[in-house]
Amino acid sequence: MNEEIQFILDSTKESMDAAMLHLEKAFLKIRAGKASPAMLASVMVDYYGSQTPLGQVANVNTPDARTITVQPWEKNMLQEIEKAIMIANLGFNPMNNGDSIIINVPPLTEERRKDLAKQAKAEAEDAKVSIRSARQDANKEIKNLEGASDDLKKNAEADVQELTDTFTKKTDSFLALKEAEIMKV
Image (tube, rainbow, N blue to C red):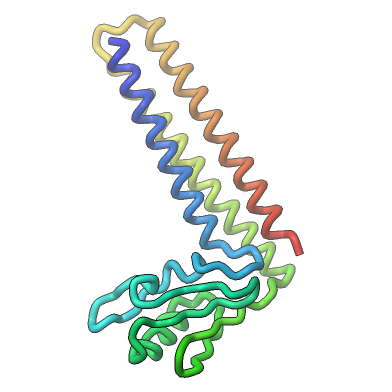
């Protein structure tokens, strides 16, 4: 019986870890002032008829805090990459110099910082919803256990709640760090 409860707790923790991992990835896409190759992670390039991530057709670097350079592996892909960056609607204006694409990352305005902070808050709230959903699923599984005593079920539910509280606190502290990073001028 304890093995079943332990399995439920382990799978719940895995679900909550997945929610945190998703939050980390989402936060990487929210830029906080300095240039990062992760800003272009969502860009998909039309590579000979198939949609391919930018990182698979070009080398993306950040020579300094305000510049991103995209060096395609094939020269004839320059226009396609430039078009894909424009289509991705990231607010960047790519410049093509014949060899590579240079993107100057503009400094954030106060209004844009507030928008990004709101976006970060929304992502954190989504993560919390996923965490609570994992808790709900675990509690349902515990309630449906055959042959377990009520005390055992109550203890397992308390453990699930403890997990939920831990991950919610992690999410809040992660959000606070990201907001501080975004609002720092």
